[in-house]
Structure formats: structure tokens, C-alpha cells
Length: 84
Image 1 (tube, rainbow, N blue to C red):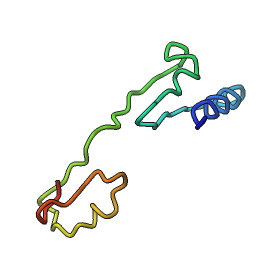
Image 2 (image 1 turned 135 degrees about the vertical axis):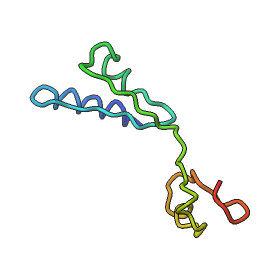
Image 3 (image 1 turned 90 degrees about the vertical axis):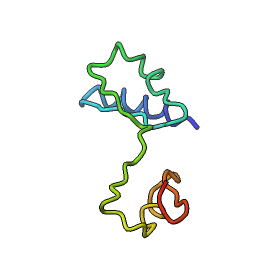
């Protein structure tokens, strides 16, 4: 709680003497833009697609399950011995 406001305060503080890149990676509530005064005040914005699903190269996959066990946020799962 309060991560975005703390990040914005630090970004504004550091921006007084340095170039700052502020990235909001919160998938549920990306509200860093609110605390930094909105997109119009920024020098540059780069859209980031955070909802893209991983792509499985089935030519290289041997269905070992390593990616399922090690991929964060339960994005992959095994269904009937193959990845979904």
C-alpha cells in the first residue's frame, strides 16, 4: 500500500538532478501516472504490453514441465501432459 505514491515522490526528487524513468508494473492498478501529473507532462511515453501470453515453441518443447514450475504467476499449466 502506498507504493505508487512513494515511487512518484522519489521519481520527482531524483528528477531534480538526474533523468528518471518511472515504470508502473502494477497489473491491477497502474496509477503511477496519477501521482506524476498525467502523461501530458512527461517527456516521452512508451506503451508496454503486460498482458501478452508466453509463446511455446513446440518444436523445442519436450513437455518436461520445467517452464510450468518456474514461470511466475501461474501463467502456464500442464493439461493432459502438455502445456496450455
